[in-house]
Amino acid sequence: MFFKIVSLIVSSLFVVTNSEDFGFIYNGFNRLNLSLDGIAQLTSNGLLELTNTSRLQKGHAFYPTPINFKNLTNGSNFSFSTTFVFAIVPSVCLVMVWHL
Image 1 (tube, rainbow, N blue to C red):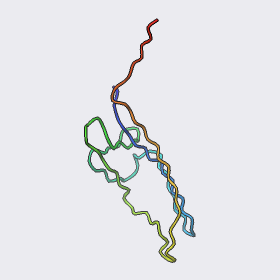
Image 2 (cartoon, rainbow, N blue to C red):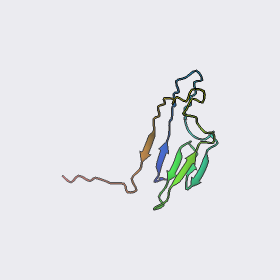
Image 3 (cartoon, one colour):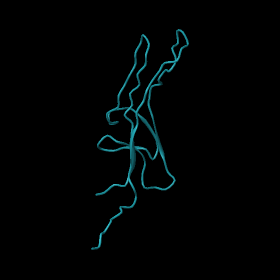
Image 4 (tube, rainbow, N blue to C red):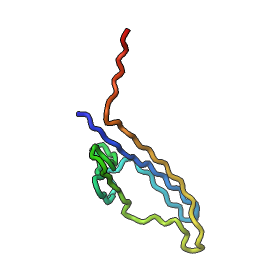
């Protein structure tokens, strides 16, 4: 069965530089306690699907614990980096036929 999906896989790595380093990496979303909204769903293989073949529909996923981007002791901002990996699957498969 062929699924036409637009999926977003967020492989996030936040690197915080201070005395209390904090970081995390998502390698699939199955074991996370995300709050899903709209048509968002987790697929059986760990992908986070925020849209599907429905028109004008979308979903959201929220991490359950707030992430602090500011040092509470001296007020400085933490630096961070993030990486997103996503796939866009076309709704129509194009078949090219060459005639000789």
